[in-house]
Image (cartoon, rainbow, N blue to C red; front, side, top):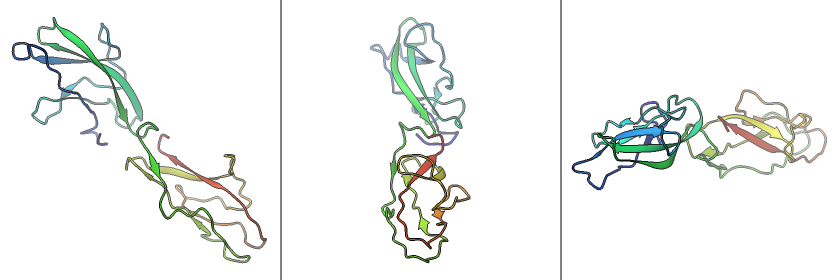
Amino acid sequence: MAQDDATVGFVLPVFESAQNVGCPVDVYAISSSNSDPVVAPAGLNAAVDDGTGNGNQIVKPTDTSVHQAVTFFVRVSATDGLAYRYMGPYTLEVGCLATSVSFTDDPSFDTSIAMYVGEPVTGSYTYLEPSSSQTYCTIQTNIIMNRDGTTHNPVMVSPCTPDPCTVFDLVDTINPDTFYFKIQSNYQNL
């Protein structure tokens, strides 16, 4: 699925009736259930021709800026409407959802850095952000966390701005110490 207003959508499978020549499937109704009456699900427009000239139908979200997953059924019938069948369920996922995005650590990601007492504190640690399987799902913030998942007290690492911060400064390198932390990357809508 592409992520721009013109092409975001779910291309419906091609449906054929047993008597496709005399009674072709040509009515597609989007419904929130697989029984009558047809009730359009919130967040989806009606199925329309996809514009490719091959007769495919596409279901588009009403708002491509809303991160959502919408499950729906398709009631297919012939023009006369006497014979019909519900197909589905289908799910249209729009945006950055945990079910449709995966993340990969940068191969050069450093998990341990040794420093000497008295070294400069500026730019002490550079975080190489993970990549997203969906290029439009971008990191909004990177937050230093304790290993147990609690918020890190900025005693050792200075707060970092602007977001998404990737270069962290130490508070000092005067005292010998070892400290452990995690970085939580927060993606849009995740």
